[in-house]
Image (cartoon, rainbow, N blue to C red):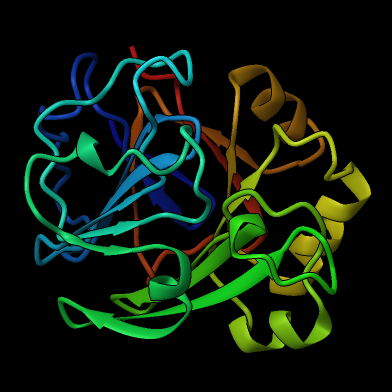
Length: 241
């Protein structure tokens, strides 16, 4: 059921698949953005008007999660070309796909403006096969940033292009990104909601470093611009079944 935490409103799904409805609460803000976690770095973000964004779909067997069914997003974001992040055949429709050089720069899809900032794992060597695209977009006044598989804090110039965000998806599985570097990333963007991406063990380890942690009862949650928390809050989903 819904439980307010600080000024942030989250809601967990009833036990079961992601297609089931979220419980309604009288007086809840009318414009809520829903976030579903399907495992690893694969999330579905749904706007109040019904437009959905899917991030980094994974290939069968590449991670220890089952493939979600009946996905028909309007937009798919791919940050890196690996089996864990680029399986666009996961969806059952023909969405606009932002990936590689197509995702770089400013793109508008379904009325949403996306900024894709290319980050190269080897500084000074702009090899497309070595590129991770960081995406930034805004839904209903909430500023989102999806870091994908960054290996280092961003340069001052790249961080300035993205600016401050409200909801930050940050990787926690990559051993090349140290705890100190994750702290630096958080300082660069100053998010109010922090969503760690990776294995449950690494997510829980990351969350232990924060005083404000919200654990959902399922693999979905709701957020709103009006009710952002007063302090940075880590959102921990229950692993998909």
